Length: 75
Image (cartoon, rainbow, N blue to C red; front, side, top):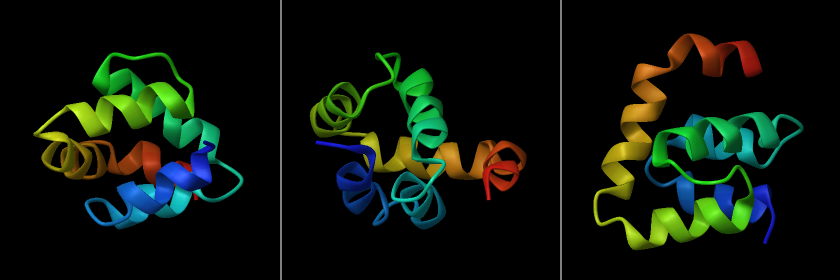
């Protein structure tokens, strides 16, 4: 599992964030997601958190909305 793989899951809830995971700033985007979910900043931990959290898609969309400036600076 790498950030690009995780991006394929995230993109359905948060298209910009999911796209970033598949690109050169994937680690930065993944670290942002990890911090919100309270897990280690690695693809496996974030993927597990997303899978195990029934509210994951809502939380991912909230990350995209609440961290617009930070996400924009990654592009």
